[in-house]
Length: 86
Image 1 (cartoon, rainbow, N blue to C red):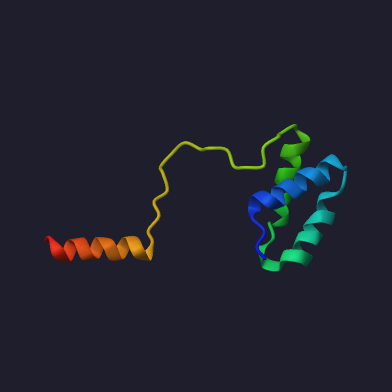
Image 2: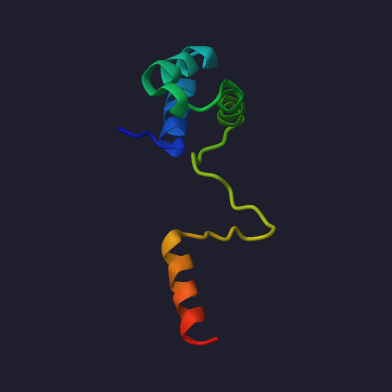
């Protein structure tokens, strides 16, 4: 079962509300999720954000260049179009 970053952040938020220590739930993440857990530094950063009053567990939108996603299907379609109409 996969646990997303947003779900881990929600857990962090609840733990902060309960007054728990960041190291405790980071260790729980590592025990439960292994390599898929958030790094301790990221957990500590989110603990600070929630303690400062942040409510949202999702990333804030950032300005700058948009990410482009290249998938195998998109590449295959592009290659087919190029072959058909050079």
